[in-house]
Length: 103
Image 1 (cartoon, rainbow, N blue to C red):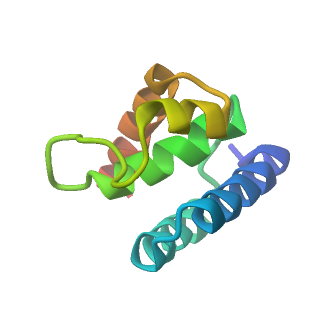
Image 2: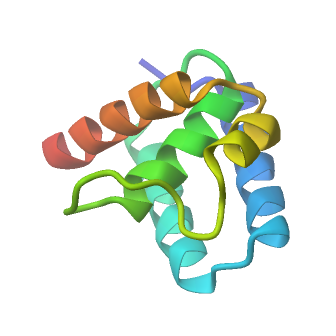
């Protein structure tokens, strides 16, 4: 199964815009590394790009700890920025964590 290129490109644009609005170079480098890994593995990304972008950032931010959000960003700001609910971001973050564990 191949990644939906349109979703992936929009997701990458959202991630770049997010880190422009909320700078965090260390987190941005890690998120970009994961995006490259998913692209190389042809991980399918069906659904809203905002859910995937927010989910990837959320998953990487909370890796190895109890989920506590994205530092310096309110949940409402995340919802507004990515145009999806926190429930969607949480579901995508869970999928991202599962994919990271299985690859």
